[in-house]
Image (cartoon, rainbow, N blue to C red; front, side, top):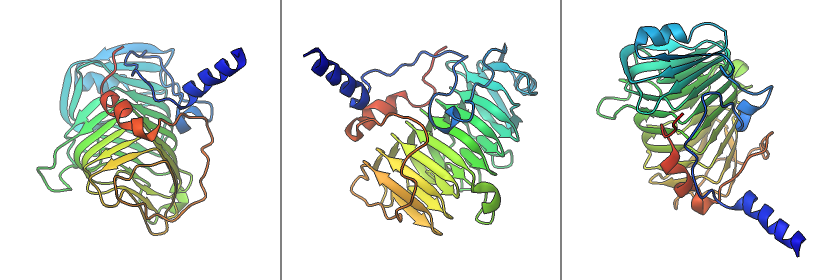
Length: 314
């Protein structure tokens, strides 16, 4: 009898949807989900100095260099630029903080964490809201990324672009909304030599009112699970030989939730396509190289939407 009861408990832990979203976090948290948890992990600035910034100049100075450091954004910082983040850094948004017109760039470095940061309306002349290029071991968590769709598609650039051979990237618990071009993976159709090693995990994110790139994924391997996609003009586009594993996601309001161009591929399991169809050719990526928890598809919406975005306190 005790043995049977133990099995029931194990089954509940493995398959039941979470009943409560944990919103309390530590500035020293490290990546435990997806590709960012592999290859020695992603620890950011854990164990380093902690600095709180309230101005653009202070933010720019605080995130530079390779020393371990935790940088906390407090209040609203406004500008028209992108700030380069150094290696071994955790950038944390305090409750209620915001970057208006100021993006973050992670380029040619490794071991970076960006959490609970709200970014809006970064102009195309400055760059992406979040841009990760030629970087490795990056965890992007509880981001709130948006602009508006009142201008043409090139007035702003991407919300979250992952390009130039990035590896070990995990995007979790984030909200991407009210924008034209959401998330591009892979630099260009001619950049396969650099971009084929790409590895990205998207888990537990909310995507809504987006025109395209939800995400658009070139080359490499991508694992996309427990996401909610509402009222977007486009779906997941697997491109240029990309191999995607797409599991337990939920869509409404699009006619092409998962599709391919230029010989992209996907293995799709347990998804709710909202009455539309997956038209992507079946690929070979059938198992992610890490352990993870799939939320029951019927519970993905209730588990993900309320907790996505800048919902943490520290």
